[in-house]
Amino acid sequence: MIRSLFPVLITGVFISCAVPTEDETNYSAINSSLPDLNWEDGIEIVTWNIENFPKAGQQTIDSVAIILKILNADIYCLQEISSESEFMQLAERLDGYNIVYSTVTEYLNLAILYRSGSITLRNQTNLFSDYSYEFASRPPLRTEMTFLGDKSIDFTLINLHLKCCNNGFNRRVASAELLYSYLLESSAAGVVNQIVVGDWNDDISDNPSLNSFTIFLNDTLNFSFMTWDLANAESDVFDSYPGYPSFIDHILISSDLFDEAGSGDVQTMRLGDYISNYDELISDHRPVVWRFKP
Image (cartoon, rainbow, N blue to C red; front, side, top):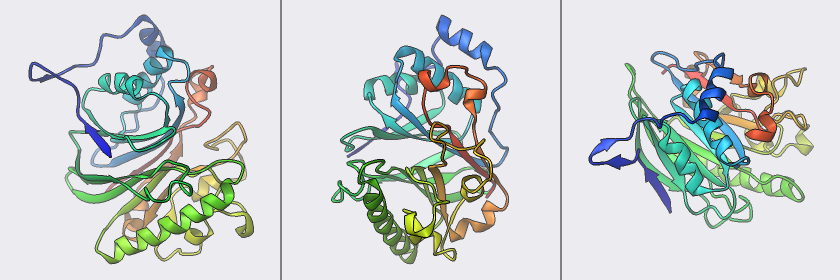
């Protein structure tokens, strides 16, 4: 079951952004140099594991609210939400965004925030509910959306969080094979513009024998990781998981978006450059964003 939530209504009108707390005001002032990601006539998709949200309670909620407002992206795909009620506190602070929240995840939830003025939600579901082991009890969250820019585009967006440690490699390989077959079958059935984002929990730059996602990497006719260049960079300065360091948060697209890929860019948001206690306060992952124009 997935719950699609819209900004809370009181007496028939949308709640505006809450009056900033003292902590939020101070945090905003410190980080006024955070970039605005919004592109005119473009789509910005951010994937971000927000580690056991909220890991530092109200201070994390306040901080993440400010970050999302300043980054100003169209879509945020979030992983590792520990508290639904506290996540809803965050969502109520984000005026102009709607929510898709998965309620079938057994551990560490998934959500998508999308800007209501530029994106419409056409459908939503969870995938692979019968494969809880392979997907670490976190069935991927699938949405069908339409971008409402000057050049509109329909697309399918899947948010996932794959298995990490212990026997994680075999489970990631199994989940990748299931996902690969599903995406090909969907494409054959007429589904277009498929985008898969999230915490894939492995680096696509590993040798083939140790690579969880070889099945995708071997099919360059149908799929491409937009994060390929960042994951294979000589320097680890833009790794999405700096503590290891490694690049494990990825964005995969289907071939019908290859032309759009050439019009955009992919970035790792080094939020620790702006927030001195970022790891302790917010997350051990950095957000990754793909921006493109239809």
